[in-house]
Image 1 (cartoon, helix red, strand yellow):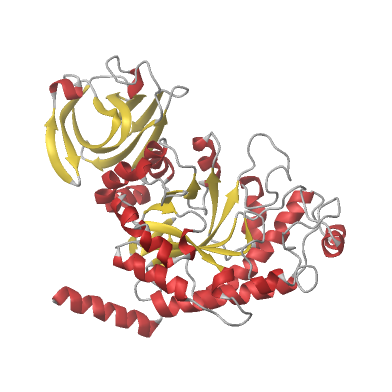
Image 2: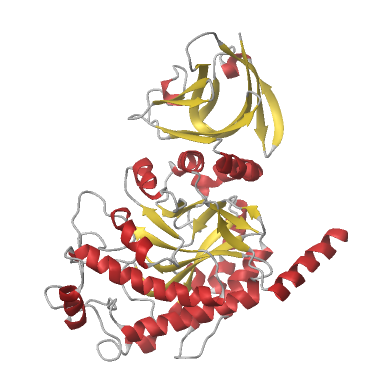
Amino acid sequence: MRKAFFTLLFSLCAIASGAQPVKLSGGQLQLKGEPFIILGGELANSSASSADYMNGRHIWETLREAGLNTVLVPVYWELIEPEEGRFDFSSVDYLIGSARKNGLHLVLLWFGTWKNSMSCYVPEWVKKGFGTRFTLARNSSGDTPEILSAFCRESLKADSRAFAALMRHLKAADSAEGTVLMVQVENEIGFLGDAREHGPKADAAFRKGRDRDEERFQARAYARYAQAVAAAGKKEYPLPMYVNAALNSRGRKAGEYPSAGPLDHLMDIWKAEAPAIDIMSPDIYDPGFPDWISRYAKPGNPLFIPEIRQEPANAARVFHALGRHGAIGFSPFDIDNAPEATADAYRALAPYLPQIAAAQAAGRAYGVLLDRENPEEDIVIGDIRFTCRHDGTVSWSPVRNGDWGEGAFLILDLGGDEFLFLGTAAVATMAPAGGEGHIGILSIDEYDGGKRLRRLNGDEDHQGRHLRIPAGSVGVQHLKIYRY
């Protein structure tokens, strides 16, 4: 009863004061003053368009049981403003209510002017105005794909008005609870086929502008558009906001990938022109995961992975991202249809999220990702050198002669010669970083669900030689060391 009273009191005070429950601070996401790490998943594009679809397929229950604490879910401009100036937020209210019922948080994806470069989620009344009131971008051949121009003032005004209405509604519906953690502004902005758009306004702006590089010119236009939309929303309710990038992979040229989006080589422009955008994030569908995330984990740009291809390797990658780069969240795509890959990893991580966040903030979290190309890596913590190897290097490992996949450790330095290892398919040995003396295993305790499961020794730690979380499993082990 006492706890319920203070919860109610906090909610009333928040409403009265206009307090904001969610913010970014010190490179971390905070909910009601406490760090929050997103163990997320993004729904397939059309799932959230129907409550009957979501309920009939028991999607909320599936997500909760898969260990998520947050769902990334689209909000569709075409559904919330079916007629110009008339808003219907019933779909948003359904999402908020269902998330609360299932103990989940939300990140809302604003499918507004652009989704994967195209303008397919704008309302019907906008589509009917294509080519007249609403200007489409032209490519260098003179064609007009279904892509609204970044120089169309009418679409910018309409999008900004709708987004502001959404944020105003969120403030009224959720500012006391903080169910919604962040909002994505548009989706994978970028121009297709050319480095920049053409047309009378775009060409005139290019001639007069300071950018001679066509992609940088287009990036400036997109960033200013996103800034105007985000600023209109933040004026109503200043939740953290981010943009996501379809990456420029495989050596392609601008236009062969969605040009001018929030890409790492254009980060300077996006940061300068869109200060209302808090984070630029990568959507990862190509090889090279460690390299991609290192490009976005920059000072002033916390690492958030809102979208990544569904594959078994994600069970390892989430540990690496949280440990190596202090990621604030991880989110595979199409999570409603394939939640299995990260389920065990999320369940293992969940009891330790406060400790992980504290270690990230203190610089005491470490991460390593291992595979056949990178089977071994050293991590030095204080005066200890941990040599981390993929489990496939162990002679009796079940993957020794098969498909290694990816292994990983997230290591927390707990102080006092104690360490917490979370991960999969990895082995660690330890030695003095200076090379003199020996370091031994005092004890290893295995944990499950935040509770001590058993003391590991003998075969499980190779007679005191190593700490191992075998391939095919996800584990948590508490290590204490001694020196001799």
